[in-house]
Image (tube, rainbow, N blue to C red):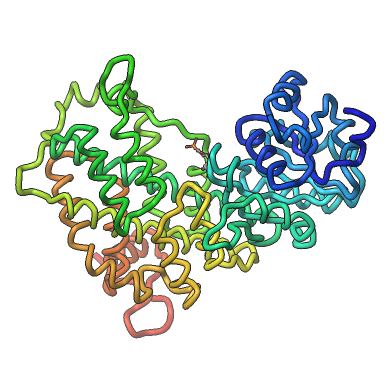
Length: 474
Ligand code: 6PG
């Protein structure tokens, strides 16, 4: 670092992996001078050397002390590091070098419980802490991600002009929003990722029905997705599903999809969401099914053993069993149910953790930049603005949509079940829908059983108080 670079940068960034490097370039491009540091000096130097016309806006730092002195006080430093222990170690080292009015911003995918803890530790030790969820992958980080902020509001206000400038824009509005104290931002990002898993799983289920049920080629499936992307399902994930389906492998000359092993990876963010949904007793069954499906996908050996014992399911559908339009409508219905659960989970967490999460704003921030961006989120933002506490399925707009697509979801789930085509996310969405439109459920049986074996008592219809049944009376 040259001496002229001292106190010249308005923001710092630590961790020049793919996301960090792209975010740093985005910040530099928006006119903010940025100081950068990576544990490996060569990475920092290479990054600077390859930053082209933006090099002037970037101060590469070989040691952490240089990063600190390159920043104008009060300093703000973004951390782009993997979640977990490394992050805690880095924060401890940084705190020693920073002043109490400086600011540490964790922009990685952290578990919100860790962010809550780190925010509390920051309060005790000084140096405020912001946990921000950044979505959009490599491309989003470089050209406009969706940003979900959490932590002390004054700290957010200090950097919101930079975050707003680098964020994606929807109708000119920046997709960057403070969600609440402590881990609120990382929680919203976690639910985003849970929904991302569910959206991807439902698309994969429909892909499976098209491939194995209809016997369609990857290219033909790509055309179906491309067509759907012009309708109500218009979204980034449908768009890329069309693209990956029509892509061919140069090596084998086969469709890319046909040479990719069916074992899905995961870093754990979807699982965090499912765990939290169970913890808060806020059903997110489509997300839970999607997480379970990823887990099952990784049990390839066991799946092969299962096929050897039971034989492969028939899978092929009779010519008149389903239409492609039914699949589109089933996906629409599944998506509505999934988002209703996701926003329900946000509302439950908001109550439990005292956040006042702005649900319409969450929908707005997800309209551009992030992985789950879609045209439907625009309608969700409108519905949630009218009534943020109503189950999204019950809003006028989505209730009408569900009435129009419910039968298709039912047909798809039924046809898949008969053909042995697994559709766990769509099926669990349908079961949730059916449970939520049933005023007389079967939990009376559960209550009778509980009372029978444990004298747990039950309520009688139309009567106050706790009651017991006449069990064990011979
Ligand atoms: C995003 C993504 C991003 C990342 C996921 C992948 O919003 O930009 O969600 O955070 O792609 O973490 O997660 P898995 O490896 O768990 O699929």
